[in-house]
Image (tube, rainbow, N blue to C red; front, side, top):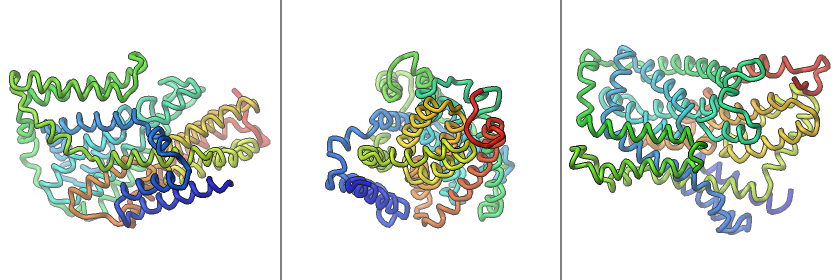
Length: 453
């Protein structure tokens, strides 16, 4: 490893350590890491700027603004009380239902957006019945980061898989005569969510007493201005649909999201008084955005770009190639269990994209069926990223929102008590299903190589 690669890796690991332990503010730690990479020549300041995916930042700011307006409609409170009524006053069941719902929503919507949409639901119930919000919001963050790879629309890794392999929407449901991403991740997800329901039942959350006798009857009163709620929901829904149909329009997702947010603001500016919408002040809405989280995203992109610029990710990929060539079982297993911890501390998109190309080129050169390896990569890349806030920025957003609501900071131990069992159980269950469905049927009797259908 060259000296510049050593420097880049040392700065990155030190930054991730500071982000995870949170001895100083995570955003400050990430920004210091970027500055150090520039100071030591790992990248220039211009490169640091260009490494940031500003399309993603535009998506975040725009959708967060839309979600902020959605939070003012009263619909989250309405949904919260309906869910509470459905759970019959059982707080662990309520939190499990809300968290479980977030995973399925994230198959179509960015995971951070899902956290922003559902956090007000938990906050409303928490204020009424006084249970700690951070654990519940963190569970939503973990769940929303889980199912994004189940279908083509939910997250960037499946879209990169589509770009590299040409797989289409239904390939994520059924491929090569066997269930693929949707079914395997859904089964895994149900096991994990069920485990956490019993975890919540054994926590202090289960001791909260609720009176739900009038919940259902009073829930509608939260929507004080139905016209405002209808306008926000219509524009929000149109924006999500337009993002799902991005290829039809031929523009970036960030442009669509920004256009949706701008459309909503224009409707309020032009028709707000005439339609008696009474929208909240735009300046106030912008002030409520989590700008620290946005700064964290920006710094994370730049840090990973620094690693990429000195080819650290290619070194990891080259180390894995001999395992791919030796045996399907060995190759898939090593790829899966090496990827999981890497993405736990590394924003995983750049790593996954690099490995997708390695698998594609290796399979073309050696006559291998790459799909067991593709699936092992994207599944481990999704599930392993839930380990820390460095691996999944949605967790940073969830943790920040929960701590702000509870007015206290969580320790690293408290965080890991949630993230570690979530990650370990999901990885083990998914690994077993993957072996049964996508590895063993493809193995030759000798156990070496990969057979093409």
